[in-house]
Image 1: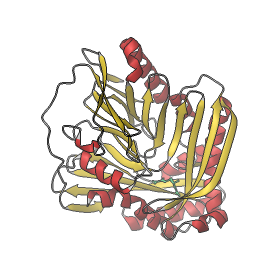
Image 2 (image 1 turned 90 degrees about the vertical axis):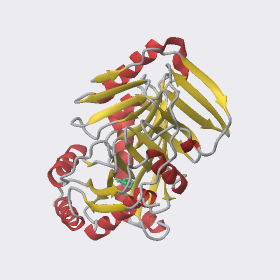
Image 3 (image 1 turned 120 degrees about the vertical axis):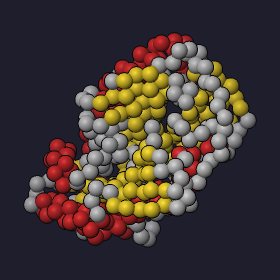
Image 4 (image 1 turned 30 degrees about the horizontal axis):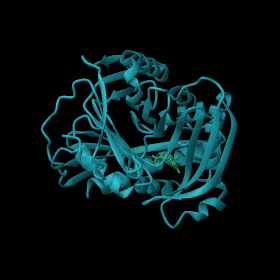
Length: 391
Ligand SMILES: C=C(O[C@H]1C=CC=C(C(=O)O)[C@@H]1O)C(=O)O
């Protein structure tokens, strides 16, 4: 694990004039972190602390790093927040960032929290990326269709019930991509989603994996999608309902040992700009002392991004997908000093690197799936970042 801690750790909080265009506040696109939903949430910059974790036990090790940091802050810790982005599996790098400056906007009021020295830096205007050139990622579109067809064949043999397969798409722009530009465009187009940024992974996810407030846990499971029409047919399709139910079941069985009074409501249809999903709301009361990251360790990957049974799906993904998922499809969000926080699933996102972006999109596949339909579904999911980048 690599760790960077600040020299001085005094924490200051002050109310500032409320601004609806928070994206203008970071002085540059460097080290921007974000978690915004319908104009509310947090955006930060600078790094008061950074923790990078690779290998097994990433949630437990991240929880330890965060609680050690909180202990160092002492009484000041109450307003500190860590932004977290986990790797899909043990092989990748997970990141926790405590921003030096954090702007929180809630109920039409804004506050700025500063940790450490927070040296002021010159403000650069938000730059547009210019023309975008697109190219294939790990697999060309047609080849990925064949991979889905092979997965369908294996599902029909009864090897497993559901698998989620993903593909990537590469963008190259004239100018370096300013994360503030992409975040602003995503937030404008997708107010129902959580617009996130952690260490260059930027997206607008519709899926809340786990939210913890005291002993209350909530989640909204999404699985089963339609890119055309209003999505109402999803409710009456047995294969979409199955695809959805596997995802709900996987979340419920993961949280069950830690919770009582588990309630579900759904499925209903969640209509987004480019796509509609089946959605089930879950709420529960925690009965064990498990923290948010402990719950995430149990829940990830749900069958919204992995499959059923989980182990067989992981095997088929690594056999067929030919993709390094990195931090795509893994928990992303924030934690506070008291153990509360929100973790979404990093979907509808791209990893930025200078003037390049790598976009990710995946689909749940069941025995009845049609590979051509699944390919179109990934196109609809790419559209979130694609349209924002080309704005
Ligand atoms: C894996 C993705 O979406 C998941 C979440 C919602 C609906 C999904 C589906 O219908 O396949 C996926 O399970 C993605 O957006 O890359």
